[in-house]
Amino acid sequence: MIRVEKKEIERLKKMGYHFVGKNQHTAVKTCLWTKKSLLDEGVCYKEKFYGIRSHRCLQMSPSVFFCQHRCLFCWRDLISKSYKWEGPYDDPKEIVDGCIEAQRALLCGFFGNEKANKKKVLEAQNPNNAAISLVGEPTLYPLIDELIEEFHRKNFTTFLVTNGLLPERLENLNEEPTQLYISLEAPNKDKYIKICRPLVKDGWEKLNKSLEIMPTFNCRKVIRITAIKGINMDYPDKFAELIKIAEPDFVEVKAYMYLGYSRKRLKMENMPLAQEVFDFANEISKEVGMEIVDKSERSRVALLG
Image (cartoon, rainbow, N blue to C red):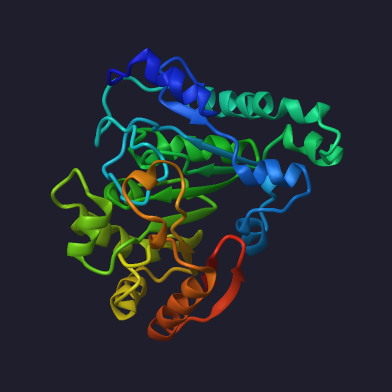
């Protein structure tokens, strides 16, 4: 695969990434909400919206070092080294089995935690939802179709999050995920270039092609908008035009959070309050003909449906 310094992989391990497979392009990282759920301190908004169980959700990526974007709001440290796949890749079965073992290893400490919900800790040993969204662009993994199929074979539901820059990969998926997310962070091309900082020249055009393909999917479809105050919380009518093309079942409008490495690129004032997110979501809902069907104030996210 692409050359990645051993010290860089070790640094990521210290940050909680657990690498899987011999080629080290796949990683698992326990979500904060998985830990909170095990301690009965709350659950992810996706449990509230879609019914997945936070303590049984496995957050992973088969393409840690590959992405076509360098998004301003990304809380990761933009560790991706290439916008296209380079080098060998691991087998989907090896990845899925490795991810399950990694999740168990990452959560084993909860067996000794007196505050943990013992029933949930036992259930967490057998995760049943794969959030294919940790870092990098998952559709760049050459066998993403087979990876989704392997997760389903093991009775997982799958949430695939993509930036939409590989429409041909989406178009040719034989095994649809349980839920397909396409990230839509800008109402027009100029703002897209400023916010997502694509490494490919025709990123906006490819994203729009993926939006056109989205209605052909039979799975649950979601458009995700990261609301960044002072950056993209305008032109609700233009967002609505793009959403209408995609014909999603839901639209998530979620606040940018001033976390991690994004603090090197944005300011705290770019993080909108929950009510500001809800107001922006309401503007979009009126333009697109949808309603706010749910919201989470704690996560600063509104669900349009």
